[in-house]
Length: 634
Image (cartoon, one colour):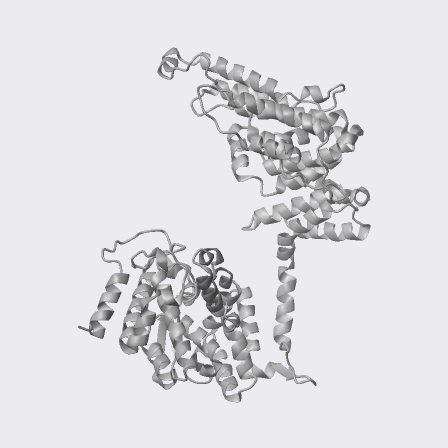
């Protein structure tokens, strides 16, 4: 017996909607929400043929459309129910005037508009159903059917922006629909913005090639043809511009609708909205001699655009400044006087205030200050005020490196946002110059190398490695300092240790940071990670022996058990990254092979790793340092 359409629709919806829903509470929407649907992993990635609605639409379109709209509206209601949705979204819906049939409100935002194309693990049935609707309508058009009554029904009966997202794609497939039944959609500012985002930004993630490749060549090619269809790469704005420049009736309709748009209060959004409105005005297009149409900004809008750019120029410079400084520091040539003056002007124009972008502005100032110190030394000598200021900025960053265990732990986890990495360039540059002037930069350099900022330490040691012939014995002193610091880091007190342990550790840190880097006679023999690791082990064993007898009895350790791993392999990895990592190229851009000294350093690091693993009471895995040593040796 053949099931009635109503019964089939009820059964279909019952299989898709979760039978025992539970209310989920969270501070905001998730990245991938279920919207009350049953989990079905087979519906990832989105494809029209994965939805039973495709066959249902082909068998009984009326009943299928009723069930599909029920499903979409149900999910849209669940979307709107998420706590904090309306508070965080300035556009939780869009109102469309459907000619003489009045207005309708469609709930949703850009994410809902993208439902017919986006992928989901938790709500794949919804996405596939909307994709099936769009595919079926396109198929009807291809077969010569008039889909106007169906689209009118969808616009009158749906309450979801998700359906509008599917209809816009159908209109892209047959653009003549925007001359008729889909013309009301050309009046909404939000649809232009959402579709622009869908095509230019979200579209990069619509086709999951890796997942489709696992489903066979046929499925891969079908999905690629559907997702990457040429008409889907065109934005609604491009279609509207094409229509208004060819059809005066559409141009008049769009112009009247645009004149009623409410401009946003935000300066950037206001300007973007006005630019879009100008692009949708047929009067702003002029025909050239070869028949092409050229868009011309209205003079008032152009003035406001230039004024906005001038106002935001300092912010833009703040954002791109560090990137540009990286390029300047990587170049071999110094800055010319003119270039240095321009960079100094940007430095002065970047205030060191405490507003919401404090970190970005500070990072830009540090980057420019370090770049001027390294690449514009002669110019700074002739500009004493600027020289004093950039030196102060760099030294302030170094002084911010904490001397407490907690401060160093925070720096190891969060880093310095690149501040110390740029400071490393300036400090190393001034220290390597030698002489009396370099003495004042010795203490900041030692403080930097004992900062736990892996990126900054790695950069400083890379610069030193490139200049190790010039540094002579000072090069070996830097390596020795790194090994000693990796051992001292392992002696840091734990949460169960008393205040006396931390006080002793801080004295050791103060002693290490007070070391001089100009001793003579030091060479390769001073680099002995294994000896330092053995000393750390003895200190840990002595610390254990001082623990309360009852506690030692409770946590008994075999006499041969290791008390410490000796050295901090992360610190060693950053200090020796020039040796065991992806080595940065030299001034000429070439990467040289390891020389004999480098191979000997690899062997002493490997000897420490062998010692670290030679613990019969524990089964330790090789550290990342060991793996990097092995790869460097090969």
